[in-house]
Amino acid sequence: MTALAGTWALVRLNLRRDRLMLPAWLAALVVSLYGSVASTVTLYPDADSRLRAAAVIAKNPAVIALYGPTTDLGTLGGLATWKPATLLAVLTALMSMLLVVRHTRAEEETGRLELVGAGVVGRHAALTAALIVAFGANLVLAALMTLSLLGQDLPADGVLALSLGFGAVGCVFAAIAAVAAQLTDSSRAANGITASVLGVAFLLRAAGDAAGNTGPSWLSWLSPIGWAQKVHPFGDLSWWPLLLLPALATVATVAAYRLADRRDLAAGVLPPRPGPAEAGPTLRNALALAWRLQRGSLLGWTVGFAVLGGVMGSIASSIGDALGDNPALRDFMQRLGGTGILVDAYIATTMGIAALVATAFAVQATLRLRAEEASQRVEPLLATRVGRIRWALSHFVIAVLGPAALLAVAGVAAGLAHGNRVGDLRGQFWRVFGAAVVQLPAVWVVAGLTLAAFGLAPRFATAGWAALVLFLLVGELGPTLQLDQRLLDISPFVHVPRLPFADLTFLPLLVLTALALTLTAAGLAGLRRRDIG
Image (cartoon, rainbow, N blue to C red; front, top):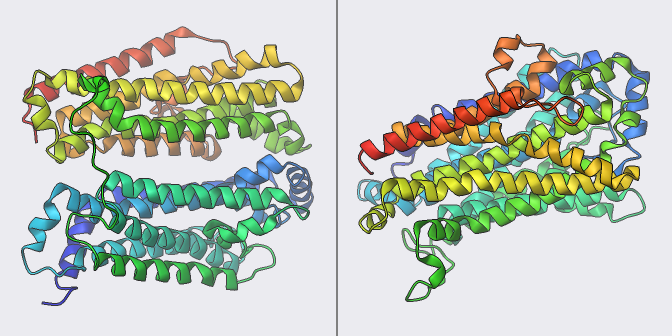
């Protein structure tokens, strides 16, 4: 038996397991890019409007750090893809990371890969199958993006270069995730390592792009995301930086196979750190244990939200200048946030985006219940005096209070940055902070939906991620594509009062809170009646 025996059987198995998640990821990424390009044609109908927008944006380092360089903004394709380029590259990397870790380290952690490996399956079959699915998904993504943009009056070579850049970034982080899966014996740690590398890549790109000609702009060359942007698909097209991405993916893939030969099944190359022989006084109940398991993740999210809030607040006051005298773009921005002034509309919109990101933490924290159950770690706990409801609530409390802390941090950072910039700290701080925390009931609805799926149908516990993707598409692309209001009303975030310029109405917040409580009660009732495991 060779080391790759059974690879194609595992590929078919992985595709079957991902038959819902993978198409949802691909559709979300393709539709997001297509919607941005389609809307830009209307917002910037001529070259003069694009050049004016590019000139204003180029003066704001915070905007450049968040979205990327402004070299190609004078072209329709460059302006249409500038804002989503970095975000979609990060999302593509996350998709690839989750695919690889799901089919390698997570399978070993739960013991399923050991059972599969008892058959005619080679040592490297699982790793190879995971990489084939991840690389194939990125190739399909590049092809779908190319086909979706070819009819948008954009140069074909630029469209192809842009799409290949997204796919190549995904392949790089799939290979990095494969390396991380060999280093540690935990899927959460493998995801954490890969996410940390992705965060460093984003920060290096942001620092290099924002530095300008007089600063350390070379930092962006240390980032795979920066390499994809150096291609300049709609400007001075240069193909050679794109070659760096498959080269790095190849090196990381070879390293993953070398590391796989140096470890035992279910073990990592890095030895686990032994814990104390006895639990400390802070681990006397289920809530303390849940906090111990999730505190590291929450800390990382908190740091990210502090940075995000500071960036959003620092550019809020300049949004009017960035829009220039383009009436179509002003109307579009007002439709996103309501009929108030542009700065308030921007604050409402960005805080809505922050709420969607905070919802990702809520879903992740809630799904820790499913991870504990699938790994059979919950059964010894339930054999003690800890009951099912108490155990579930211990994690769900963190899923409820964690987003509250994240949005509060983002609101504080944005409020301080915006207030200092406009010289009205006392007046602006509470307006921005209120716009952040008012999003909480909508976040709790998605958390309750995830808990309901876990309690009633644990096989479909990941419905929380599907709901989040749906609400993201509806919220981000709905106003742009002028979708029917009944379709927009599906998202709970649509019903949140658009502070700071709209009136604060408590009825929708109470309805959303009641819906979240109903879903939570349904999930707990289902957990109480079903079998564990």
